[in-house]
Length: 269
Image (cartoon, rainbow, N blue to C red; front, side):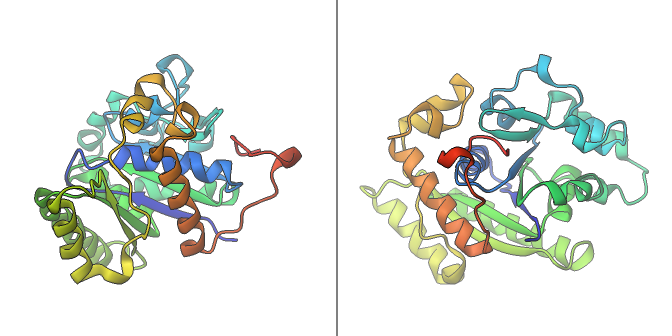
């Protein structure tokens, strides 16, 4: 089974992008899908949400794209799965790459040797248009776009789709839209329903059936340095991301591997 690289991307912040990348990666690992989480956001929240401290980082993703370290040597193993970590130093990568040839392809180049080690590589992209997001989209086979159910999120969706189309036209012709995911959904409000209906008018066949609700446990889990499935397994947030993972597996036609000792695999074995 060929490894799929999926960018989790949105040009609007606060839509549950990192929560989605972290929670989906943890859920897939539990289900026997060998998954690597790549933190490609200078805020480095995905790294912290997987419980990785600065002391545990031998080399970060910035060193990898600057060709100072191999991606395989920078990967950190955690109880929740493997992560290629980021630090705030990533913010300077765009400046460091100015003038370099094929600078948009540095992440693709770095991740290519890892395809044989994983079934899925999820990239938590930076939430703004720039060289980092373009690198994430150039490295990816597909894009998962989280959409918060409010009208400002529709503008972020439009911008992200435009960027994706430009990257596909100029740099990565194989890039596809994996799917759109409604996040922070509150069925009690008319607004959530209106936004959902508007998106469905244009992207009906690309929307994940799973909807991520507003859930306090999703907000609390990052402060404990763990994905929501390990913070509160029975919460609505954890269950919804498990459902998303199952749908994701079917959509990408992934094949879960046998779980060691008949138990859920937290790591990659």
